[in-house]
Structure formats: structure tokens, C-alpha cells
Image 1 (cartoon, one colour):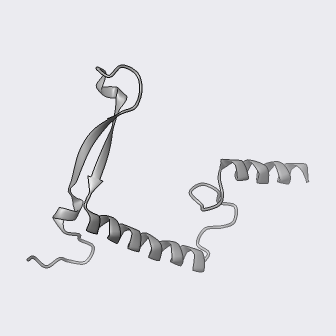
Image 2 (cartoon, one colour):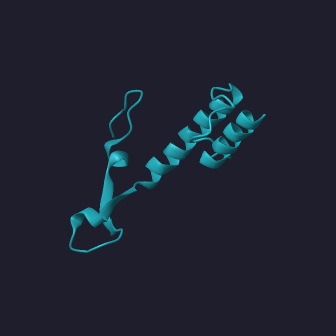
Amino acid sequence: MRSWRAGEVPEEWRKANVTPVFKKGKEEDPGNYRPVSLTSIPGKVMEQLILGVINKHVEEKKVIGSGQHGFTKGKSCLTNLIAFYDGMTS
């Protein structure tokens, strides 16, 4: 078994089985498929653990301001539009 340097993950965790999944249109057109990758279970578990730590840090340190709506839990394009409309009509 090989030892890893900081920031590295085992090569086996980075490998994925890529399967084409049909979207819509003509099945003969390769552009009508999207790639879906199935990755290893240990890699997905580590990904979720790291995501949890990052999210906790971002929330506790208030890294993202209240005006940020994209990619923020509980906020969306609609909440951004409502906040903008409310600000403009006040």
C-alpha cells in the first residue's frame, strides 16, 4: 500500500465508470446523451465529509453575505427576485 501526500486521494477513488444516458431527440445522435459517472463509495463518503466541514466553516464564519442567493441553501433565483423587487418598491 502506498502512502499519500497531503491533498492527494488514492487513484482508485478518482476512477469512475462513465455511462451515456439518453436525454431526448434522436437516439442515433451522440449529442443527445449525457455522461453519468459512477464513482467509488469511499470517494463519495470522503466527498460528503469534506463538504460538511466546508459548509460548517462557511456558516460559522459568515463567509457568504445575506445578499448571496445562488448556490445558497434556502435561496434561489426567486428569492433574489423578491428581494430585488422589495428593495426597489420600498
